[in-house]
Image (tube, rainbow, N blue to C red; front, side, top):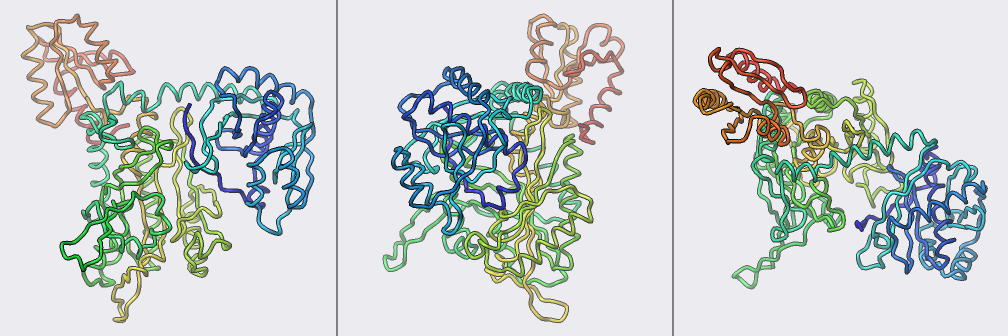
Length: 604
C-alpha cells in the first residue's frame, strides 16, 4: 500500500463554481464510491472525497483492510448505485444541526471538518439515495451520469496529512464521460507504467537509492551522470549566449538569512531542521544553520556584495545549485520527489522598464529547450494571488501585486503564448508561471518555473544607483527552465522510454567486430571517436554477433557499428540505430562525420 500525506486545501465557493464538467463528474463518482462502501461496510467512518487531476478518491476509517481484491465487489455495488439513477439533492443545515447529524451517526471526521467552513458560509449537504454527505458541490444531476469509472489503487492517508493523526485508507478511482475515453486513458496508463523512470533507471543503471545514504537522496551512477553533465553543458552554453554570469554558493546558511527572506517561517515545513553550533565563547548565542532549501537568498547576497549601478542591469546570475528540502517519506517518489536536488537556477535583477524584455526572453528560452527535446505539447499556468490572503499567504503589498501581475499578463499576451490564469497559487513574494509539459504517453509534468519577486529584494536592502544618482530596488525574476536535474531527468526517461537521442545517450556508440581479425580496425575507430569525445565502447566478447546485437539493443545503445571482413577491406562501417534497425554500410569518415554533426546540433 502506497502512502499519501497531503491534506487537501478546501476550495472556495468561487473555485467550486469554476469546476469543469469532468471535475463535477469525478466529484460525483467519489460520492457513488462512498455510497457503495457504506453499503458493504456500514460502520466505516468517512473523511473527504474530492476530484483530482487523475480522477477522484475517498478517505475511509474502517477495520477492514482494503486491497485491490475488494474492487470487484465495490465496483459491483457502485454499478447498482448508478443503475438506481439517484438524484444529487442539495440541502442546508445550521452548524449545530450539522454537528448533531454527524455525531448521531458517529462520523467524527465530518464533525471536525465542519470547523473548516468559514463563519457565515452556508453549510450544505448533498444526498443521493440513502447517502448524505457534507459537501459544497457541485455535482452532476444523477448517479446515472457516471457510466465510465474504474477503481485504481489503495493508499494509506494520514488524516489532514499529519503523521500524528489517525491513518485512513484512501481508495483512488477515475471517471470519464464515456467508456471509450476511459479505455484510452487506461491504455495510456499502461504505457506510462512501462516507461516508469524508476523501472528504466534500474535497467539502465542510471541512479540508485541506498538506505545508509537516506531516503530521497539519489546516487547518480556513471550513466546517469552523463545525463546531468549534458544538461548542464546545454544550460551553460544557452545562458552564456543570453548574457548570464555564473556564480557558486555554499550549501548552508544561517537562520538570520532565511528570516530576512521570509522563507522562515513561511517555508519552514519544507526545510530540514537546523543544526545548532555552540561557540567556544559561551557568552555568544548558539548559531542555527540550515541546509540550503533554495538559491535565491544566496544570490541576493551576491548582488549586495558590491555596489551596483543601473549600467550593470539587467544582471543575470546563474547557478546549478544543490538544494535540500524536507519531503515526508510517504511523499518521496523516485526522482520526482526527492530531498536533494540540483536546480537550473538563475535570478535576473532588472528595472521595471527592462522587465518585459527579460521575462519574454526567459519564455523564449523555454521554447528553445522544448524544441531541442521534442516536447510538442506544453502549457503555462499563470498563478496570481488572492486579495483575501494578503499578509497571510502572500506579502501584503496589494498595489505591487496588481502591477506585477499585469506586467506578466501583458508579456504573455503580446508573446502569443497560450496560458491559463489560476488565482490563489502564486509564490508568497510574487506571481509565477509554472510550465507543464506532456510526455509521449500523455503524462503531465510541472518541470519549470518563472517567478516575479517584488518583495524579497526590498527585505535584503538590494539597491542600485540610477542615472539620477538616486537609489532604487530592482525587480527580481526567478527562473529555472530545466527545473531540477532529478525531476527533469525523470521526465526525459519516461518521455524517451530510455531511448535517448544521440547527443544525450549515456552510451552513444558501440563497436561490434565480427571476429579477432577486425579487432584492430574496431579499436582504431574507437580511438578516433573518443578523440572527438564520443561515448563509445567495444564488445569483443566471444558471443555470437546476434547475441551481442541483442545485448546492445537491450542496453539501449544508440548506434551500433558492425565490422565484418567486407567493411574492414572497404574502409566502411555497417550502421544499426536503436529503434530503426539496419541502415546499411557507409564509408567510415562519412559515418563519423554524421555522428559528430548530430551530437553537435543536438538532433532530437
